[in-house]
Structures are given as C-alpha cells and as structure tokens.
Image 1 (spheres, rainbow, N blue to C red):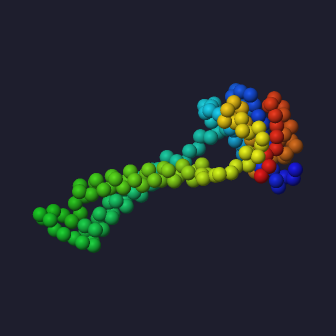
Image 2 (image 1 turned 90 degrees about the horizontal axis):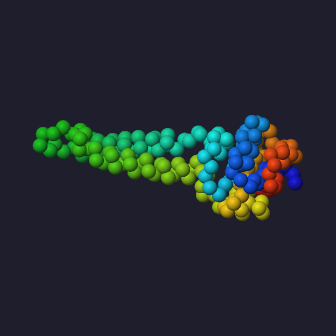
Length: 178
C-alpha cells in the first residue's frame, strides 16, 4: 500500500494496561500524532497521550464575556442613544436595571459557545473516520483497545512504525487505509 493511501498504523491490545503502556512507549519513542480507542474511559491514558491542553474553558469564557458586553451595550444604546426617555428623574444610563438582560445574554452566549466550541474541537460532525476501515475495529466498543499512530506524524514510516508497534506485544498490527 502506498503512503498516500495510509492514514496510519493501528495496534490492537487485550487490556487497558497494555494500551497505556504502548501509548507511553510511543510517546517516549517520539511519536506525537497518535490516538487511542477504548470501550470505556481510561484515566491514565490521558496522561500517557499528553491530552491536557483543553481550549474549551477559554472559548466558553470568551463567549460569556462577549454575551455580557453585548447585553449591556445593547441596552445602553437603546436607553441612552437611540430612544432616551427620562423616567422619574433617573439617569439614562441606569445600569442596575441592565443587570438581568446582561446576565441572561452572558449565559446564552457562554452555553452556545460551549456547544459549538466542543463540536469544533472534536471535529464533529464526522460521519466517517479512516479507522473504521480496519475490520477488527468493530470490537473497540466492546472489549478491545487500539492505538493508532497517524501518517501525519513526522517520524512515521509504515514499515518502521509497524515494527515498533509489533514490539509492544499487540494482538494484531494493521495499516489503516484512507
């Protein structure tokens, strides 16, 4: 198979500890573009793959701040600039009355940015992924554990990567076609 048609090389393991050990070994070897698939969450796998960079809280914070500013300045523009009405001698910029709408738009924008940011960061919607081309990958949702080193990795060479994954004692090593 040519390198143009390869998404990566995938190894199958019987238990979660073997998968975590393989992920640590692959990171130690220098591979950076790798992913692991498991039927349930494995806490140690996050550390082994170095997946601690989460941008979602920053996206939600930015959405909330933009929503709050939008709510406040929308009300300010209406009450002070567009249609000023002097009610009972109060100032036109009566900010305490703006708090409710400002709060609501903060929550609305933060929640929408959380949903849209999560979908964008996860690459959703994704109806097709190349790992589904591996016949044994159907067991990933039942009782098998997979580690895939992607061809986009700078150290990737199909033969050497397959040989390296073979040294980690997997059940099977297979190439993932696009």
